[in-house]
Length: 455
Ligand code: ADP
Image 1 (cartoon, helix red, strand yellow):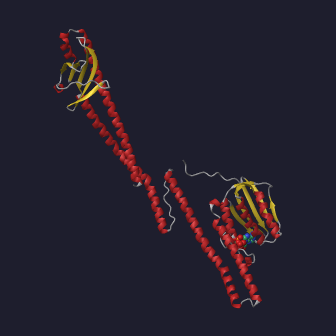
Image 2 (spheres, rainbow, N blue to C red):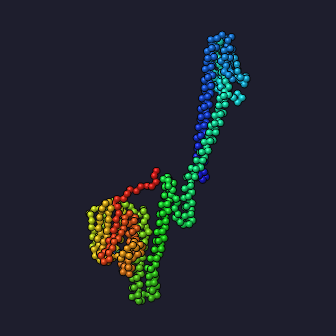
């Protein structure tokens, strides 16, 4: 059964049962109260009659009984053995009626040709000193009429109330299922077209709006990931083509000429090795790039930035025998992902080392809740025209000049992705002949994450 139909059927049935239950309750309450009222009146009449019968002479009994006879009623005096001592009636419909002894309740109702008759009974000592029972019966035409009118009104009211219930349950079904249908339709279309279409988020602040937001966020992320994957595949195949071609052509050369010519063999093996190393570096960086923007890959905590800086430069000093100067406060606490920040600093410090000869400076600073880390060198600098492209993948300034450094052109692209993941700004300033400064700037404390969905 469709969700819309289920909502419709469930709310309609529920409301029907509530209304029908209420109506039935009201009906029976009214019926009970009316019969009780009538029985009360008959009891009062009976009590007065028994009191009078005790006081008057037996000859006047008939007259008194007639005086207390209810209209449309009957009066029975029943002896101990259920023998009818006296019976009088004021309505022909009760001529053949004999009042039954009352059951558990204070009154009994008997059906006389479709009309209810209320009978009450009370003990009574007859003039002859015999224990008897007085049973007074009255036909309740007016009650029967009132009850049938009440049945009609309640049925009519229930039916009338069901109309808005049905209309609102249909509307409710539509309100709930419309966005689901839109979502399903968009998902189906996206699957068929291989697209990442979003849905209208609407203006409400309800759960359906949250669902649309969550779906659109997911589409955004899927789209970004797909683009990234495509770019990764095309970048990887493009960049790996050159070293593979070089390796292939040297391998063919070795196959053709064998190892007889020592010089050729040395050159071929050397080239194959260097291209293999380059390919290894390339694939490692490409994989890093592909993974770098996954939110789950970052885990933030409070850390001492000075410690991170020192830990990053220490192995570099040893490996390259170069001076890496760390400047700034001895302790600088901030929220970050220490591993990712170390990776980012390493890329910048390694570039500064590769593209300059002198000291490399890493300065730390904290102002107004922001932390700034700058990596400065006194290298040849980067031409202004190249600066806007520096963070593009595979972009290299003056490739020929940089070939000897063995770079891939992926370092700064990766640095930018990591900076984005860390919520940091990465900028560069460079003056030809003076040097280059890369700056990483981020808030020292991260705002607490809050969930969009409100309960
Ligand atoms: P790679 O260093 O592997 O070539 P990067 O993306 O790290 O790739 O750098 C891109 C280019 O930016 C480098 O080829 C180099 O020309 C230039 N570059 C990066 N850092 C510096 C620097 N500190 N000084 C001068 N040039 C730099």
